[in-house]
Image (cartoon, rainbow, N blue to C red; front, top):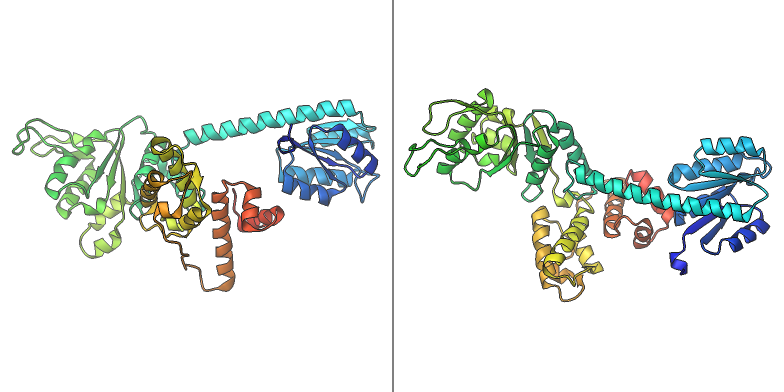
Length: 454
């Protein structure tokens, strides 16, 4: 077994003779030694050992248990999944019960029986491995079942959007998604539908900007046979197809005023009439709309009906652009790289550092759609195993969007750089700290200070 592959075991013990004995006894592990609480916590933060043996009699209270229990509490507060095996010769039964109640994995009494303790340690490592795998699988299953399981993000701005979508999904209110082109409005609409009580019904999408004005009414409301030249059979419209499901009106701002009146009547009465028809048809559907246009300004200009706006925008969700979501560009780029490499260029395995820097620096005016297109081109054009900035056809350069207040500017810069570094390093704390040029404890402190989570 190589040194790199050895599991890490932290021994918190102030007796130097016992330290040497335990280090010798556990040659199969990478043994880490701490003599007091502060040293133990520093090692825990830096090395993240899965298993810890902890002597309760630590300085400055070597004849008592107060310092040992304080150390146990701190370890479990920082890393609750750590398996802590507690040792003491002071009031063994009482200490054992208290330790287990406080979250310790197991207890052994001094003097130490190396074989017995070795068995406890091995079982602790086995249990930690099983629990770690279960957590991974539970997370994977949770992601598969979540409303927005297809949305890849680590940005608080998008997580807030996702929580809003989840919260309104099971209501019947109309939802308006506002955001620039390429931000994923249809993806969010599908996520809302999947999380709603209408998930078993159809999700029907129509891009109102992509259909000529003279055909849009027929697409939405359908038509009867013979209603106009070429109407050779009765045809359901998109609204009718979405009965008991969800109707997604993309680019709703492009609906002409005359048709807005008919759409408003449907929203009020929940019935439609096909073109050429005379019989009202009841339709039960949930309306979700999206647009990149400024509808309030269109209302002022007389290009969009105010009463229709209030019917469609019972809940308004604003979707941030990719440039407003630090770290997401790198996460999405990695996702697209793996997807496109499997399909088109299996030799491509990752990015050069310059490529990741260019991705972080780019303003992404076309948002996720632009990133997806650039990644597809880059994977095809890459000559080696790593995508370069040239493959992406990106220019480097930093955006200057920080506030003028110096303290706020520093905090904004810290948050942005930390989130970008976490994204580049796949949330690996050690690699992130190394990339940022700081220690792991400093990174943990910064994450806590700014309320950031990997």
